[in-house]
Length: 239
Image (tube, rainbow, N blue to C red; front, side, top):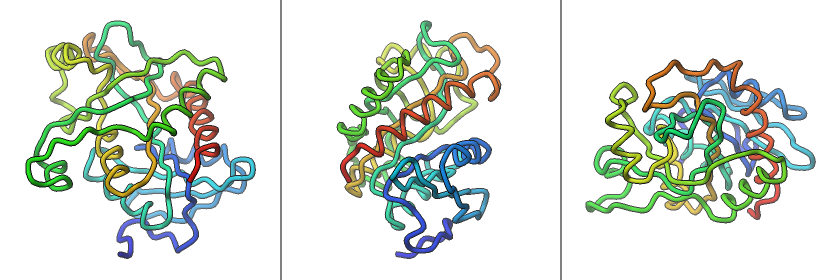
């Protein structure tokens, strides 16, 4: 099937990709690659391909929420991506997480129905988990860079403005560390399509405390470090 939203030509998307929701963040990430070239700019979904060392890497915008992100993940796979890491933001669901902290998801909860029911069918409730090799690589590279991080499950929530302290307490009780919007569908698409996926997230607020979101400038250093972690893990991952 030919992609309808990412308008890159065959061969312009690398086997290794980093995806993020914000186009401005993707532009920042692209600036960190060598010889980065814009290969698609349609509907605000920027896609750049460049080099990190000897490896080709694509960075792409996936937009906000599962349905938008699923389209991008599917189309990147159509165009040749075989390992995808989401670099994004999340809200803490436990007291210990503060803006700038890093969470590495080892799984993602979600609500049955909607997007997930359409993918899975038959009332199935599938484990949404990253590829172990890629997850292990991210953990290894984060340790090598001396980053502090927490590994654990997150929850992917479609209703951004429905998050509240009660929401945080309930999901925290279930063991979720943080809330975001796209990891579950990334992990499930990876499992269904035979593509390696993982994520590394930067905390920008704590839902329990209902404080202001950290500004992009405040957490930019952590994003840049997390991007380095993702790149190093991707280039060492077997495709």
